[in-house]
Amino acid sequence: MIIPLQITFHNIPPSEAVEAKIRSLADKLEHFYNRITSCRVIVDAPHRHQRNGKLYQVRIDITVPTGEIVVNRDPPEHQSHEDIYVAIRDAFDAAKRKLQDHTSMLRQETKTHEEQPHGRITSLFSDEGYGFIETPDGSEVYFHRNSLFNGDFEQLQVGDEIRFAQEEGDKGPQASTVRLIGKHRLQG
Image 1 (cartoon, one colour):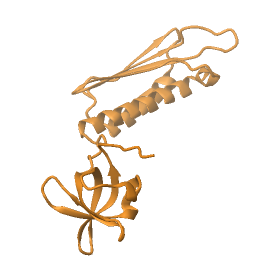
Image 2 (tube, one colour):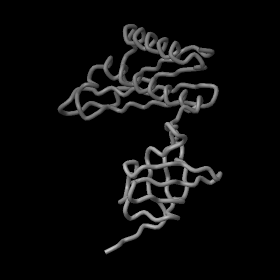
Image 3 (cartoon, rainbow, N blue to C red):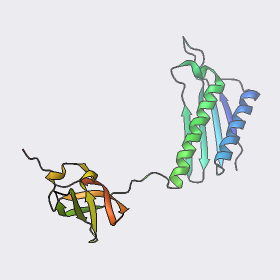
Image 4 (cartoon, rainbow, N blue to C red):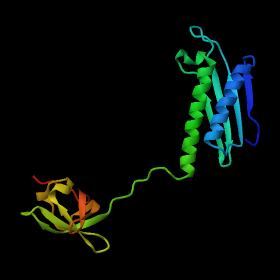
């Protein structure tokens, strides 16, 4: 870190043991993501519940070159955050998850789904149970009745628009999954 770790205690006396735990967890965060420029941790015991004891709040402000990541762990309804170490652990776990999301976004590892190719049915051989699809680039792709995902093979017509997953077959390209799109006919 360029700026040293800052630890602040509110409504509770400072503790060397708690501070040592925070420093240890901050070091782990820095090893996980070495571009952290500053980190500020605030430990607060804002109020006392009637049935529960003090529930600790932990806020972590992390500055990275592309912005700031803030984790504000308010005490949950259950009593686990009566333990200051549990509250701190939960806050640093959340900070690590946010850093993971941040690095994934930077690396553009967010999942994108490729749109399946589309085409039109150019010929059908109903008795044999197969047909051919013409793709926008003019090539033909074979498909079998078993590859039809949504619809009845007997209801298909030449000119129907479809989307398909293409793979290489024994005799050239073939569609492994065919989905009917465009006009949906209701026949009675």
